[in-house]
Amino acid sequence: MKLGFIGCGNMAQAMMGGIIAGNLIPADEIIASDGYKPSLEKTKENLGIHITMDNKEVAVNSELIVLSIKPQFYDVVIKEIAPIIKEDTIIITIAPGKTLEDLENQFGKKVKIVRTMPNTPAMVGEGMTAMCANDLVAEKEMKEVKGILEGFGRVEMVPEYVMDAVVAVSGSSPAYVFMFIEALADGAVLQGMDRAQARIFAAQSVLGSAKMVLETKLHPAELKDMVCSPAGTTIEAVKTLEDRGFRSAVIQAMDSCAKRCKDM
Image (tube, one colour):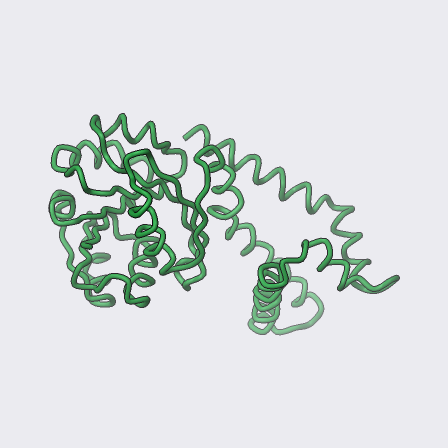
């Protein structure tokens, strides 16, 4: 399978890196286009893929095409490549707010489309990706696409109506987590810890806590209770977070994120 990327930004590079590292598709069967030549040349140097400045060249030479561009550029790019997309070509999108119906209408013809929402931890092989597809994509093709996406993290198939929730809970949430890690580190610095070391303690604690949720399969509340000794230090900190509306703020932020996604 020849894989093409239209757009060669950080997410595309993360996806390609994971796919190549996992021996899912060799670098010489991947081609990418972008309007910014230095980014293309750097990616070719790092990954060994084929590059071009011509989106049509990607469309003609790829069996599977990832539209790894910003949502505002979808209209222009789809109009450019639609006439040369073959019946058996699979289009993968990664843009929030772009529904399968919207995309089908933009192409103006029957096209196999897989809608996905990855996130930036794909850059370190720990991405979380949701995927759904239109009726033209066969089950076998879905499995093939899922296998490729698993090259840079976990993948879950979801109904399209929850995609806005996916954007809020995984697509955008790394930003919230980075803010939390930064705040933890600032708190440690306030108590006298070196900043570089504080970031390590904060980040590793978040990493380990997330791994406990996934591997123990216990409810996060149970895991929290395991840390909170009666009249201890942790429950005192939890009380302060509750007093400041910690959980409510997170839920409201996700609601704002999902609403913005619906408006795009």
